[in-house]
Image (tube, rainbow, N blue to C red):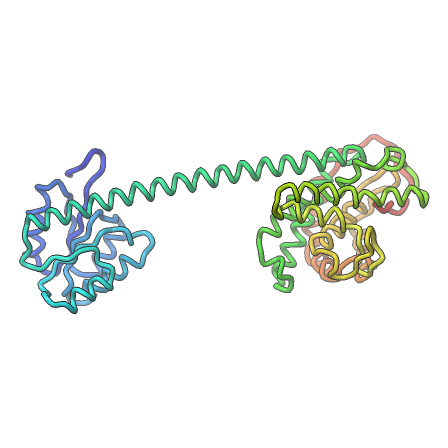
Length: 379
């Protein structure tokens, strides 16, 4: 089989007349081309799909599917549109030429053709095809590099976010499992609510990815809370509680400044909103700003429930872990007051997934003595 380097130079000849095919085969093979043939339009399209040639020599007038339609279909496909199509026809009229051009033909010759001219056209078309192949391959390589670089950036971003979040949580005797549960709960809720089609924000898959990535930053502001308050095992007094609530402002302000440094809104915009507003209540009785209903960003409303569910079902210095059933009842009782009713509805639809996440990402077992059963301490 004739080759150029390690590459076989393929020409597909499409003509319903065997004598025309024999003439073209006899002419092209000495030029170093591997010649395949098709006797009708349907056969040609099957062969083009199976092994795309470098050049197509196409007759126009064939029974069944004519050459105009074959050319249109070749040029309509993303995979074959760059293959040069040279029309070789006995139709010597202006209308046929225009139709061939409109169908996407790259060149055409009138029978009987001049062999020197045909050879030049085929060689030129082949060189153009190889150049296009090289450009497409280069484009694919660039796209692969961009995708890999994007993955590296995303991995770096994720590690950075989790490192920052774990730094804050480490002062609160929390674990990486808490952060992993939190972001998985948030994603489950967002995916469920996206399936309803009622929330425009959730139509963008980037929203779901961002809430998964940034929800661990919800309590990053705790780095600014004194140990005496943050680690206090008992209930906080009013003054201490007021100080604790400042973690939302500290966290939100920190992420806001970082976001502004970027010059444009980034994924940290959602992290900022979550840090500021995840303790706001649907009825307006939350903090730090007393926002109400849809004034609260959707991401913060979702994380609010995820955060409370995790707090309820986790053991803390001041409480035992509540069961899923107990936590479910507490969340249901707060529907429309603490929590967005839609978020509660999503939680009820996804209870099994919450239980699986809670089971699969449990905190390490502690040897501490059992603690008193107290209500979950806010913040």
